Structures are given as structure tokens and as C-alpha cells.
Image (tube, rainbow, N blue to C red):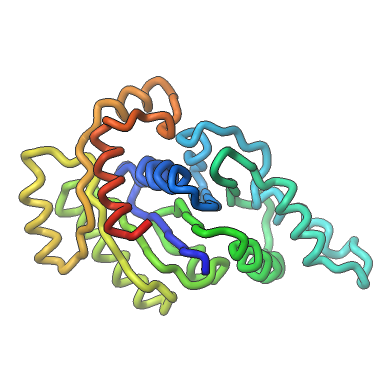
Length: 250
């Protein structure tokens, strides 16, 4: 059965960087991985080191525009499925889909219903699905993805950041989404913030599964626009994400 992992968190916490390092670990463990960039900012391809020309948003736009032009006896789900396979980026060790967003106006409920079934079918071809989400849980409320095994909330070391993690946990309950476990990863941690993070997470009853230190290697690669997949094994962030992955049994 496919393990489904979703990574979320407010902007600036390094959510996409953590997602990338988890993918780095998974691809080195001979897992068949599908990575999905569900954040409208679409930063995951850059940190992975690949280029994406088209997104699911483009496919949804096409289906939305052509809905009334297709013959009634045409299998529209098959058309959508073939379009999705066309935009699936096959990379060494993983495949990548970018959600994007349709630009047109109007309701996309029809296409979302088609997409939901196809995504559930597609996911079954992989050992792990890992989703880089936006801060909200819109994709889960639409049920485009089925049950999530692990929801990982990435936060910085501030009380406000950990409070965001608490609100996301509450929102999951309000949406009645099928999430088995919720974990918190503190990112960009320094020696001066480590103790406070542990204390605050305990007060908020958050399951803190790891603390990724501030890593100058990531800072420099971000500035140079270089992929994080190529970080060396001695990177402090890589080492901590490896520890986190072991705790998650990945």
C-alpha cells in the first residue's frame, strides 16, 4: 500500500526544502516515489533540479474549456488520464507532478471529480507519495488525495510558528480529513532556540519529530539557485532529515 506523506507549513519556514530532503532520502532507499508540488508558488521543481513545462492546472483548464465540445460518448476520464501522464516528469528515482492552478474563471468541480479518481489510481503505482502543499489544506478538503498517513508541519523556532502548527492540527479535525498522524519539524534551529522549541512544543502537545539546524550549505545553494538534491551527505540538514526519516520508518 502506498504511504502518503504531506508536508505543510507557513511561508518562509523551509517547507519545500524539507520536502526535497525527504525525497532525497527516499530515492536513495530504492523507493518508487511520486512527488507532487501542490503549492501555487511551485518551488519544488527548482529545489529538486528539474524543469516543468506544464501543470495539472493546465490540464484542468483544457478539460474545462473542452467539456462541451467533446462528443457525449467520449470517455472524458480517459482523456484526462492520458493528459496527466503526458505532464508526468520522470526523473531518476522519482516522478513529479506539479498541481499549479487553472487561470480561467468558473467552477472546476467537474474536473476535480475526474481528477480525484485518477489520482487515487495513479498513486497506487508508487511506494510513497509525498506532497509539498500550500499552507492551507484546500487539496485535502476537496479530497483530491485520499487518506494521508503522515502530515508533517514545518515550522520555525518562534512561538507564532508553533502556534501555526497547532492551528493546522485543529483545522485537520474540523475538516474531518483522514490523517493518521501529525508531526512537527522545527527548521532553521539554532543553539539559542532549541530549548524553547522543545518546551513550547510540549506545552502545545505537538509531536516534535525533529529539529533541523540552520544550514549554511542550504543558504548558499538557495542564493545561487542550485538544487538541494545535490547537498552532500555531511550537510547538517541532510543528517537531521535522515534521522527524522528513520523515526518515520521511511
